[in-house]
Length: 109
Image 1: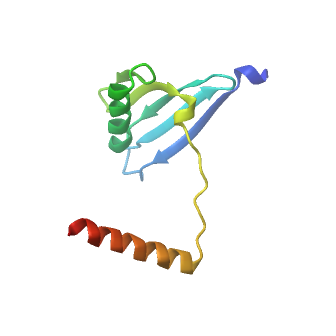
Image 2: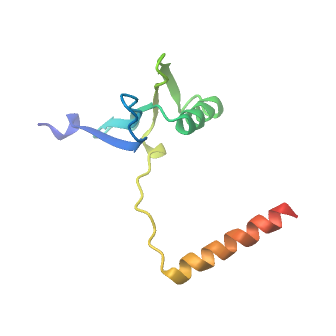
């Protein structure tokens, strides 16, 4: 198969299955292309993408939102980021928790 025509699909997030209510978020792009197609069913991601389309219509194109709630859009490839989670030592985790608690307390006052 020609590498230029290979399709990449990554399931970004999938909610737990409840009967037949399967909700999937997917990213699809072709090698060498700079735009990707996304299909989203998670409200948080859909709302974020709608806001991006409103703020940057030259970059984000909402193609369609189905009756079943799935949003299809074209976005730049550089919007997609796959990142391995950080591994923290117990000391680093404790320090981060303390910093977060202090920041939350400071915000309340």
